[in-house]
Amino acid sequence: MKTGNPRAGGGRTIRTLDDLAKMAGVSAGTVSRALAGKSVVNAKTREKIEALAREHNFRPNQMASKLRTQRTGVVGVVVPLGHDRTQHISDPFFMALLGYLADGLTEAGYDLMLSRVVPDDDDWLERIVDSGMLDGVLVIGQSNQVATIERVAAWCRPLVVWGHHADGQRQCVIGSDNRTGGRLAADHLIASGRRRLAFMGDIAPPEIAERYRGACEAAQAAGIGEIAVLKTHLAADGMEEDIAAHIERLDGSIDAIIAHSDLTAMATLRVLADHDVAVPERIAVVGFDDLPLATQTVPRLTTVRQDIRHGARLMIDALFARMGGEDDPSVVLPVELVVRDSA
Image 1 (spheres, rainbow, N blue to C red):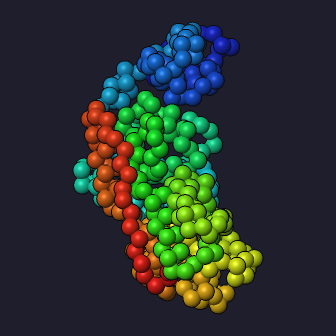
Image 2: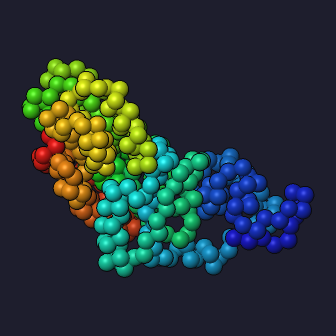
Image 3: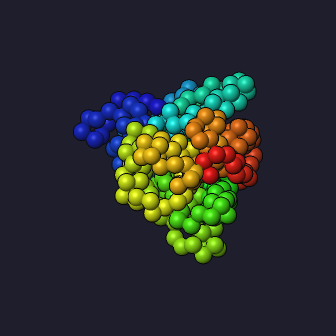
């Protein structure tokens, strides 16, 4: 977008959509949708933006508008980290899913634009989908941004999310049956005679909360009481220190740990070894993901397997369908317990 000569406003020239957004006190995405006449912008805000645009002779750049209606051949892959800003894309789960997504997108002739987002405001996703650079967006994990994703999903069709599907959600979500996974882990530990279970990780993200909820349901059904949450950072940098503090404080008061991910489980195995705690004799450990590294630990990791490869394929298929005007539904993938040596 561009303007002609400056008019009112103290001689201030509005040359870009961002300039107009700052003057109106809204996001650039809101300005774009208001000028396009989209009903998702309330009438009062739209009228204010249109009035400012007229006042400053601000008109759409027709070439830019035309480019936005055509395919760019680029799909955005976004990792929001609102719940733990120390977490990295190098997390093994992110890397596994990213690898499968990159393979699928490039095989289909698309380029991938990767963004690690630490949200500082609530319109970060609007800015991404309204950038004009992307044909569609894949979001890996909902973090604590469910409300933001849900708001954008109400009007943006080519948007697919890896995460937890809840009844009534507008966003198209591909993800695993996390609650069943947590229940399978706890049932296995309880069946092997464990009674003092703990959950290692951070239950803030919806997927992790579901894993913990499933484990608690199994514990309640077995009549063994509450499962304690041993909170840790999700980034490898601070995780082992957190785990060590928990192990030292508990000092033998637990006999099993359900880790929220394989990465956390592997860090737990290392800390237990450093403290001369035998696994699984004194403490059994179960992870979640079944990453390739799960077979390389000592002892080999018992874990809940989610089919990351198939999930990536479903995400891409759903996105392409939505780019074509369809409304593909959410999918909840089954999980299975893979029993190895750690439990």
